[in-house]
Length: 146
Image (cartoon, rainbow, N blue to C red; front, side, top):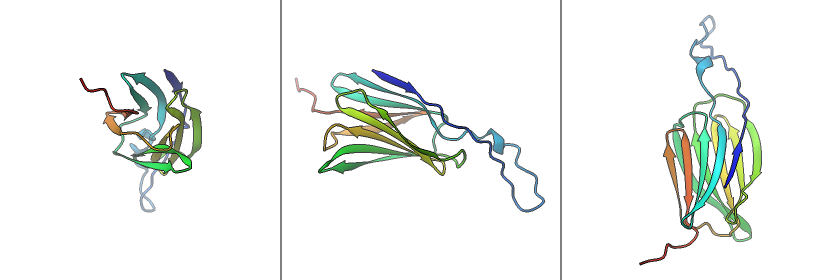
């Protein structure tokens, strides 16, 4: 099991309307969308990659990239309110035989989470949002039938 805590810069943002308007007092309370930590688990022939976010996201979508000559990568796009500084792509070792690396970046309030696999094709997977957690469940091979 691998667990890694990430610290993301938190920027104070002031919002102003038209000239002469006062700043919104609630604008400084908005927490930028960030990954606080992630964990990779392996149980019952399934992998789980859990991302703990700094806030509940507005939407979560996913797709697969790579294949052919490049390793497959499950990309999870996480939308949140604008705010915070953009974060350049960061790469962390997956420390797992199937999950080789984790990629994290933030642009304009959108997080992009990449789960790079050691295979050229992505096995069946599902993405679940649970409040401020996102779980990518990967089933590398069919479960045995009884």
